Length: 198
Ligand code: GAR
Image 1 (cartoon, rainbow, N blue to C red):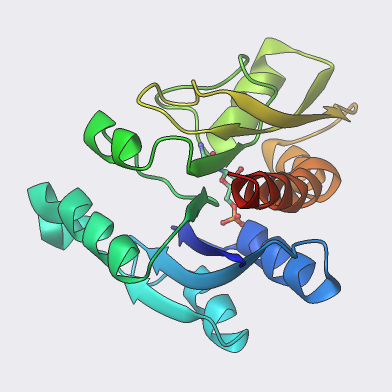
Image 2 (cartoon, rainbow, N blue to C red; image 1 turned 60 degrees about the vertical axis):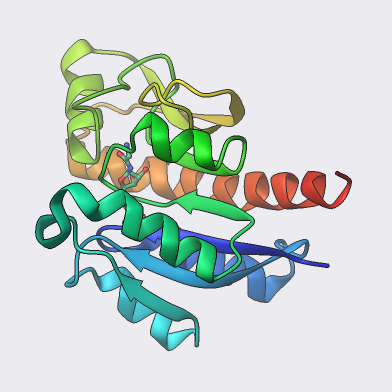
């Protein structure tokens, strides 16, 4: 049986799109994206999901406050979720949440962990930090999620060259195209496939 995948998003959802496309092309075959949840009701990612015929839900952190994670867990469980993908999900999850789904949550991060990661490193800020430091190579990492932000076991990484004249925006786009959109679907398939064997 295929693993039931829920994808958590907050914004534009290009990584979600890469997963949807990978499902259509057969790269993802051991699991099926059955739900997309956003903490932000205005996330464009929700439109991408709807267009692909995938069920959506909003779990609004601002409105729910302390009840946010409890609500998130119940939505995920009601849906029979086996694997959770954080695809541009900009909320840090507590130990209560991560231990509830131990070894069942994966995240894509836009740097080569352990560089430029952890609390405060998300989205464009990661690329700003890499350029500021002056590294010549950056990349993306897909990893399991535990209670340490960006601290779980690494599943896949891919390096991306930094070029003269890069801005954070240009670099972000290159890291997405050359690394994130490739290793996120491949990692998800790998994890879903391993789950079948359990
Ligand atoms: C992606 O670059 C993703 O790796 C990053 O935010 C962007 C979301 O784009 N995530 C983090 O920084 C998490 N720490 P998307 O909404 O177009 O997929």
